[in-house]
Image 1: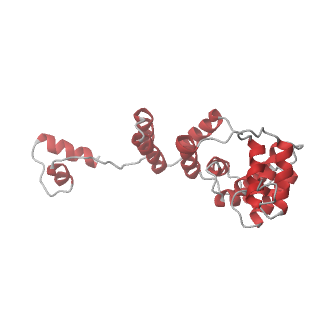
Image 2: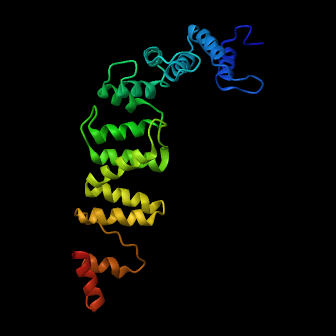
Length: 239
C-alpha cells in the first residue's frame, strides 16, 4: 500500500522484490525496471545503480553498456560509492566507454567492493594504467585467492596461474610474506615452497622461538659458546 501511495522507500523495496523475486512476488525484470526508473526520477541513487546493472547484464532490456556506464557515472557524480567498482570494470574492458586503464585503476582504488582486488592485481601484473609491479600483484592476488574470491568473469585457474607467475617474479621479501601467509593458514607444503624460494633469492631472516636464554645469548655474544653444540649453533646463525 505504501508503495502504491508513492512512498519512496517502499517503491524502491518493491522494485527490488521484482528484480530478485521475493515471497509472493515473482521475478519480473520489466516490472522492476519500470519501478526503478520511477525511483531514479525521485533521486534515488541506489535505484540508478540497479538500473545500470540491468543494462549492463541485459536484464529486462537489451544489453547496453553505454547506457549502463552513463547510469553508473551518474551514481558516482551524485556522491555515492556503489558504482565505482562497475565504473572501473567499464574502463578496464572498454564497456560503454573508451578503454582507459588509468581511469580503471582510479575507480578500483576508491571502490569498496572486494572484487576490485582481482583487477588491481592484474593491473599491477601487466602494468595496465600503473607501473608494473609483481610484488603488489602477488599481494593482491594472494588475498583474492585466500580471502576475497574471484569475479565471475575470470576463472580460478587463470587467476591462479597469473598469481604463481607473479610470485615467481617477485622479490625475496614478497615471497617470504607469501610463505608466512601459507604457514599461518596451516598450508605447510606451500609455505615450505615459498620459504625455499625466498631463501634462494637471498632472504636471510631467521626466527627461532625458544624458552632457553642461551639460544639468544650465544647469538648476541652475551655468552661464550664453549660446547660443540653451542659452537655449531653460532656458526649456523652466522652462515
